[in-house]
Image (cartoon, rainbow, N blue to C red):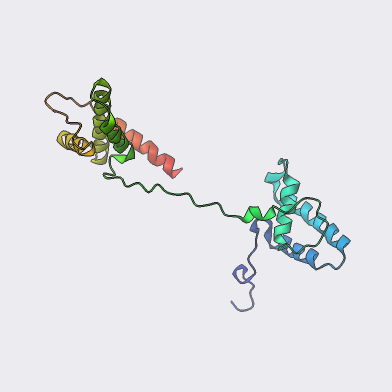
Amino acid sequence: MQGLDYNTQRERLLLPEYGREIQKMVEHAVSLPLREDRLRCAKTIVKMMAKKMTQMRDSADQQQALWDHLYIMSHKELDIDWPYDVSGAEKILAKPEPLKLPQQDIRLRHYGRLVEEMCEKLKTMPAGEERDALARHTANQMKRDLVLWGHGNSDDEKVVADLADFTDGIIQIDLRNFTFDPVKITELASASGKKKKKKGN
């Protein structure tokens, strides 16, 4: 509406948590002609800033942080004898580097990366009891993943075929001599529900 002053039309606040009134005070301090008056005004502003940032009250470096914030809000133009070293103040505005997402492709997402890593391990292991134990563990994990992914449905032959495929044919399970561990669907559903709740929180 014509005649109204909207925040969107105003200059963007560098530290909006202090509000526009504090920002105006900072601009006033910058404009004062006498150095001692600027410092006196700056000390008053810092006291008011401290009242706004009560969560910093117990911080050991509270005063350092407040003077750093004042320096930033003044656009580095406040010419005073700073009681604290504000040379590192601009680090506050620095954005962290974005986290690099893993670029590994997962061949079958319903099994996950862990199963693929176990299959890679199986390919390098010599034949024996240790490899047989890991193969059994991997097959049962794949079975559980498949049941969970299929909402209770699974195919033993598919698990065996996928395990052979993932290990380049090294691990061949004979279903006539192999029995999968029983899978309790209720336990899997409960575990899945807990994971979803954690993500939601």
